[in-house]
Image: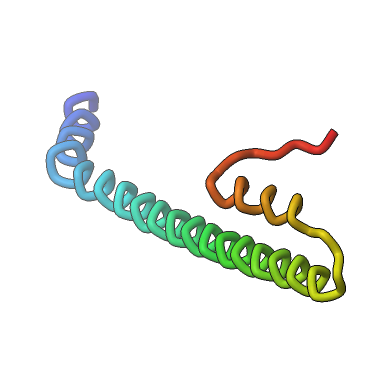
Length: 90
C-alpha cells in the first residue's frame, strides 16, 4: 500500500509537478504585468494632471498681471517648484 501511494506521488513529482508550478508562475507573471501596466497608466494620468495644473497656475498669474497685480512672487515660487524644490506652507 505504501509503495503504491509512493509511486503515485513520485509520478506526480516527476511528470506533473513542474507543469503545475509553471502554470502558477505564468498566472502570477500575467497578474504582475497587469498591475505594472495599471500603475504606469495611473502615473501617466497623474503626470498629465500635474502638467495641466501647472499650465492653469501660469495662466492665472498671467491673467492677474494683465489686471495690474504684482504676481512675481508666485511666478518665482512656481519656477522653484518646476526645478524640484519643495515649498511648504506655514
